[in-house]
Length: 477
Image (cartoon, rainbow, N blue to C red; front, side, top):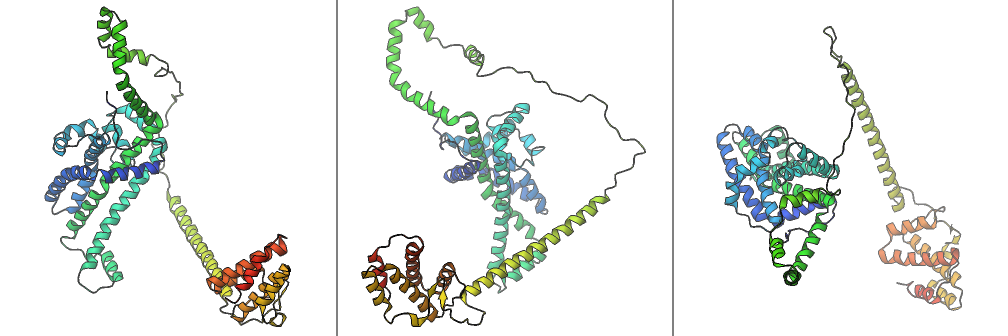
């Protein structure tokens, strides 16, 4: 038997990766998927539009309600494409009644219509064709780790449909050759100023187009989420790998195995061996193994006591307290919103004041400090040629004095250029002020001086004299 060649590689993935894989599968198979969808949805939409021409809202509701029927066509195409089978749309349309009936279409259109995870549950009814308790058990196992992602998929794509419809509507309004501001268009649209005899039909048409775009993606993402969950539960990827290995070695060993069997088995036994085994007996023998099935008896407690029935003179429940509770919750939410807004405004003002302080705005120019974190930053304390003096000190091995001279000279030069330092500023404050006011080359050079100074003065590390001399050479630039 040939091994199935799947269109995707099954491996353990997170639910969100599985949803993304479904979108990629839909993009790869977009021709048969959207072709089958339009072949079913297009005639149905035209028939509904003709029947509900004067009531487009009811027509849209009917098409929305019939989504599970159209989804079965998309899933049939995707299931065939997974194993590389050709999809003939004509044959698929002929088999649509049988396909819908065998996949539980009645329940899908009635009591399961509002299932928020129907994209995940659809393969259970259509591909596995399970019913009743077997279907509920399988769905319960699938939902343990995948229902949340399936529900979020429904929520997100429903919003995508709405956004697409509104976007096209606003785009048409903007393309009208009238010079109207965008806020006026949105306000008029919200008041219903664009309502006309055909506006309902246009809205239903746009919604139908949005459904044509998103619904095949919804089915494909739910299908790959189902495959991912089955892979986690049953190890499909491992099974396929072993089947591929078995096919590879089967072709190589077929001739040798047949020759050995003919050589060692007598003719009568050979004829008996060539007879195919009874499938029912083989299945029964496999299922008798403890690993494949066992019966288990479970006990549970069932209440068999009397049931409570209301008396004839009982008073109806007073639910006015719900109104009071709602008012309390509303007032608490309003107070919390005001408090949160006040805190947010306070933080904004704080960071604005901090930014302005670092930039030097909004305050009177301060007196230049004479000392910063122990360094003398008076201009008269510096030599005329700072670079030359620092180079001489570096050549003499007096690296601490050379770095101190460059450090103080840089601070004085920055103050001359208008950057204000306060007497209580730390080295970190000075770095932040330089970063906000100086150019990129100057603050990079200043950070190199500070780094070497901290390593030498505070960390007591050895500093290369050549590096200090290079900083002195770059001083003029």
